[in-house]
Image 1 (cartoon, rainbow, N blue to C red):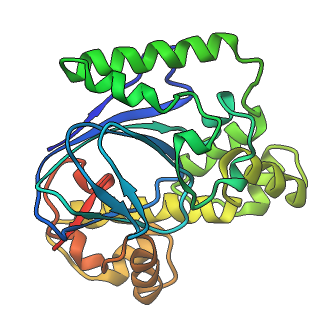
Image 2 (cartoon, rainbow, N blue to C red):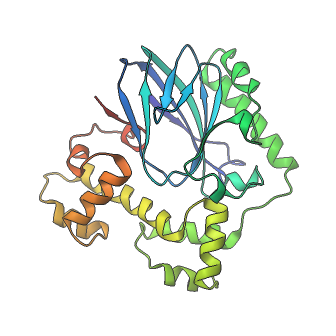
Image 3 (cartoon, rainbow, N blue to C red):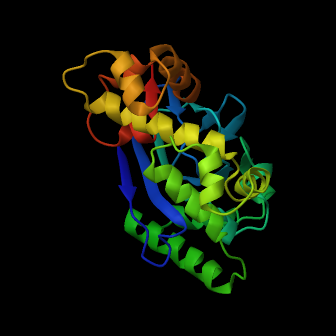
Length: 272
């Protein structure tokens, strides 16, 4: 039901992945989408009507922007079928295409017509006319490459480096050390980081640490105890781990021990 696709080499510094979710569902099922430290543009394909956080209806043949989230997003199905295609931008990647500071878009869920984005609202209708996913992705990449060529903006190299250091350390590098490594005072570092990613360095580190903990949970065999996993992932204790997993996913750590193999949990966790 869930698939991922990699961007072309020219777009890979800015686009993390394309993702697609298609399949039958049941009315009232809740999809919990944990934050990934990124922003997404979502295209709804086919006859679907769902709700983001019980507020914004997602209608068919439309496109939506989901900004950087600092907690999980809840999507409630009100249909028997779902078919959505998403573009997930890397941290700092979206700043290559739009001028708005990302900190103004945190936790925002908008129709693309309400935001000066790369894709006009009618673009989703055009995608629906394509015969398969490959043609849709080709159309998306053609638009993104065209925008990239004509863009006079650039990613901030210091913040890109800081994001890379956080990822490499799995979210446990102290913020003071990060600011020292990229030659910025902590205050200036935090301000620039928010502009280009939407997060404070601490918030982004917490998200990266959370995903590392989830990977450890899903791959531990046999399961020992939460304390050992918490310590390995950089948390104070099992209680700290449980609190963060609940805050960012809406579930307890134990829910991920029995999650299926593959990458589905990285994008959508289903709660019945």
